[in-house]
Length: 112
Image (tube, rainbow, N blue to C red; front, side):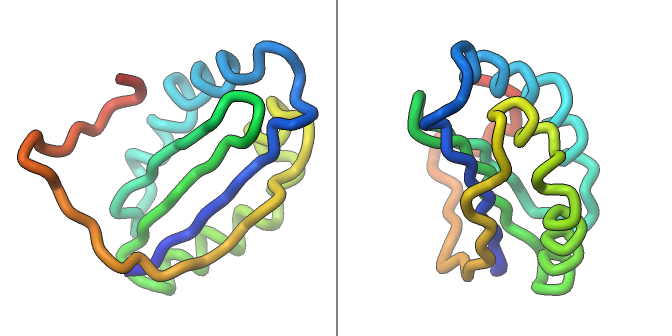
Protein backbone atom coordinates (compact mmCIF):
# COMPACT_ATOMS: atom_id res chain seq x y z
CA UNK A 1 0.00 0.00 0.00
CA UNK A 2 1.11 3.53 -0.72
CA UNK A 3 0.84 6.38 1.74
CA UNK A 4 1.41 10.11 1.95
CA UNK A 5 2.03 12.32 4.95
CA UNK A 6 1.40 16.07 4.92
CA UNK A 7 2.39 17.93 8.09
CA UNK A 8 2.17 21.52 9.24
CA UNK A 9 4.03 22.94 12.22
CA UNK A 10 1.78 24.59 14.81
CA UNK A 11 4.71 26.12 16.71
CA UNK A 12 3.95 29.65 15.46
CA UNK A 13 0.25 29.16 14.68
CA UNK A 14 -2.31 31.66 15.98
CA UNK A 15 -4.32 31.10 19.15
CA UNK A 16 -7.39 28.94 18.64
CA UNK A 17 -5.85 27.09 15.69
CA UNK A 18 -6.70 23.61 17.05
CA UNK A 19 -10.42 24.42 17.22
CA UNK A 20 -10.27 26.01 13.75
CA UNK A 21 -8.56 22.93 12.31
CA UNK A 22 -11.09 20.57 13.90
CA UNK A 23 -13.98 22.62 12.47
CA UNK A 24 -12.31 22.70 9.03
CA UNK A 25 -11.83 18.92 9.04
CA UNK A 26 -15.41 18.30 10.18
CA UNK A 27 -17.10 20.78 7.84
CA UNK A 28 -14.92 20.86 4.70
CA UNK A 29 -12.07 18.38 4.50
CA UNK A 30 -13.84 15.20 5.63
CA UNK A 31 -16.70 15.57 3.11
CA UNK A 32 -14.23 16.28 0.29
CA UNK A 33 -12.00 13.28 0.98
CA UNK A 34 -14.95 10.91 1.32
CA UNK A 35 -15.26 11.30 -2.45
CA UNK A 36 -11.59 11.25 -3.54
CA UNK A 37 -11.07 8.53 -6.14
CA UNK A 38 -8.09 6.31 -5.38
CA UNK A 39 -8.09 7.05 -1.62
CA UNK A 40 -8.51 4.11 0.74
CA UNK A 41 -8.59 6.29 3.85
CA UNK A 42 -7.27 9.46 5.43
CA UNK A 43 -6.55 10.20 9.07
CA UNK A 44 -6.14 13.71 10.45
CA UNK A 45 -3.79 13.89 13.43
CA UNK A 46 -2.64 16.73 15.65
CA UNK A 47 -0.74 17.47 18.79
CA UNK A 48 -1.80 20.81 20.29
CA UNK A 49 0.88 23.40 19.74
CA UNK A 50 3.22 21.04 17.88
CA UNK A 51 1.79 19.81 14.55
CA UNK A 52 -1.23 19.00 12.37
CA UNK A 53 -1.04 16.17 9.86
CA UNK A 54 -2.96 14.37 7.15
CA UNK A 55 -2.04 10.71 6.71
CA UNK A 56 -3.34 9.17 3.46
CA UNK A 57 -3.44 5.61 2.14
CA UNK A 58 -4.04 5.20 -1.60
CA UNK A 59 -5.01 2.22 -3.76
CA UNK A 60 -1.80 2.51 -5.78
CA UNK A 61 1.18 4.74 -6.48
CA UNK A 62 -0.51 6.39 -9.46
CA UNK A 63 -3.38 7.64 -7.25
CA UNK A 64 -0.88 8.89 -4.66
CA UNK A 65 1.24 10.63 -7.30
CA UNK A 66 -1.79 12.36 -8.84
CA UNK A 67 -2.96 13.66 -5.49
CA UNK A 68 0.53 14.63 -4.29
CA UNK A 69 1.31 16.53 -7.50
CA UNK A 70 -1.97 18.45 -7.45
CA UNK A 71 -1.61 19.23 -3.74
CA UNK A 72 2.00 20.41 -4.01
CA UNK A 73 0.90 22.97 -6.62
CA UNK A 74 -1.43 24.65 -4.11
CA UNK A 75 0.04 23.64 -0.74
CA UNK A 76 1.07 27.13 0.43
CA UNK A 77 -2.44 28.45 -0.35
CA UNK A 78 -4.38 25.40 0.83
CA UNK A 79 -7.06 25.74 3.50
CA UNK A 80 -4.82 24.06 6.08
CA UNK A 81 -1.98 26.46 5.32
CA UNK A 82 -4.28 29.46 5.60
CA UNK A 83 -5.59 28.31 8.98
CA UNK A 84 -2.12 27.49 10.33
CA UNK A 85 -0.48 30.55 8.79
CA UNK A 86 2.27 28.66 6.94
CA UNK A 87 2.85 26.02 4.28
CA UNK A 88 3.36 22.35 5.18
CA UNK A 89 6.77 21.50 6.60
CA UNK A 90 6.58 17.96 5.20
CA UNK A 91 5.00 16.30 2.17
CA UNK A 92 6.32 12.75 2.08
CA UNK A 93 5.31 9.60 0.21
CA UNK A 94 5.75 6.36 2.13
CA UNK A 95 5.02 2.65 2.08
CA UNK A 96 2.30 1.39 4.40
CA UNK A 97 3.54 -1.85 5.95
CA UNK A 98 0.13 -2.96 7.20
CA UNK A 99 -3.34 -1.87 8.23
CA UNK A 100 -5.53 -3.83 10.62
CA UNK A 101 -9.13 -3.38 11.66
CA UNK A 102 -9.41 -4.18 15.35
CA UNK A 103 -12.23 -6.13 17.00
CA UNK A 104 -14.09 -2.90 17.78
CA UNK A 105 -14.45 -2.16 14.06
CA UNK A 106 -13.61 0.82 11.90
CA UNK A 107 -15.53 4.10 12.28
CA UNK A 108 -15.56 6.69 9.51
CA UNK A 109 -16.55 9.95 11.19
CA UNK A 110 -15.64 13.65 10.96
CA UNK A 111 -15.07 13.73 14.74
CA UNK A 112 -15.28 11.32 17.63
